[in-house]
Length: 315
Image 1 (cartoon, rainbow, N blue to C red):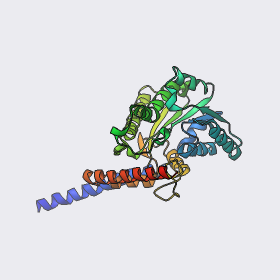
Image 2: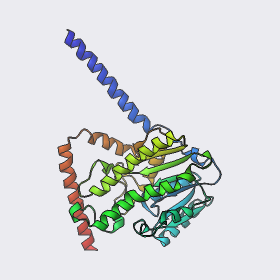
Image 3: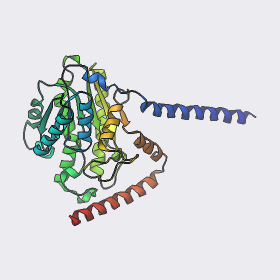
Image 4: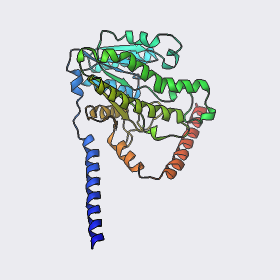
């Protein structure tokens, strides 16, 4: 009898815990965005790194639709100019500025970050989106085993996925906290942060991005600075250089991913999975034993590697 009562209470407690956890998870995707808080000042600008295509350009279009002026960054001047004209045609009321910088080459020049930042001095910068990242920017097929990666490629992966965002945010921070006007920093990560064989440097850099993002948020709170820092985890997306399939429910377009990420603004959390179906995927994956995850991840990554090599040889 006594044991039966104990099990009844345990069952009730478990049901309450699961219900609370589910509601906590669900409310994140029902919570209204507070993005409007950051364009309530005259001529607000948003700087998006890596925004000549993919998710970065998706962010530019969504923010432009909300009335933000846009600073596009990329390494191809002609491509950026074309995207600038696209934005101005679609949203003629906004202003668009272009910043050209090859992140891999940037570190070869002393004071390059400061020179980069000078180009946005005087702008009312309210949003910074550290979006640039990936492996394809280094022009080698991904994934690749660590032993097959050169020292130069390792440095390039770190520069693109980690160093640039850190140094740029450091240099822009005084501008973001100027006059006590609220600012937003979005750090775009990847669900690969859990681990990805044959992409260990990339996955490690994304784990750094989220830990750094959490820490920066704590620091802003401690310093009483009105800067919201939010880490966004991203899963598979179409409309990017490595993904040419049509959008599906589990694989959204780059713009839809950007919309989902911006919908999480003001949620009060430090790191979130931006897109709801990706979040469901992450929850389900958390119940899979690690041994199975390791085997499946290795199989999928090797298959991806072989496919990309075949595509390159066929070009």
